Image (cartoon, rainbow, N blue to C red; front, side, top):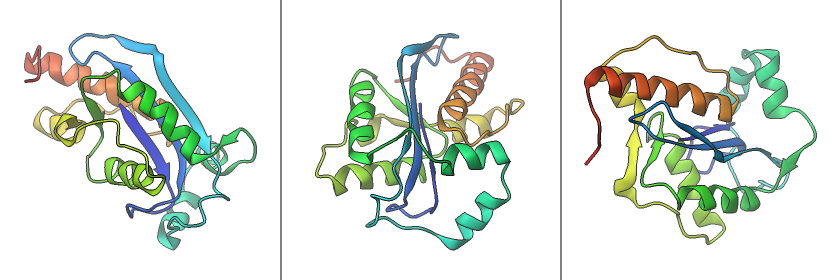
Length: 170
């Protein structure tokens, strides 16, 4: 599962943080040894897009979410974060995200901007939002902390697939 927080909906958005965690969609397993989370250095993303409406939206979010995404300290460079994401993504058979029209285009644009190969094939990217719409379950919320949101999305997906009786994806 991949989740990101940004300050733009465009493919070249400034990325605030990235969360990635491996899991088995057909069991309750979450592989914490296959996880990565980091806040990303914003100042060095000068060639990436910042959206005024998204910044206004962030100001309406919880103080905790704002601090996690915009607070000082413990940030790494985007290209370093992408290398860490690649290490995990290459170990996974599929990449899941909550809607393929947001996180994936932004991540793929970031990889291309550093001339890095994208560590997944387009046909191995799966969308949790579609599964959730087909079989609604109670939501666990959205903290806007990328790793916490990954875990919430994994738990929801595992519940949905179990309720649907799906034990494998072709």
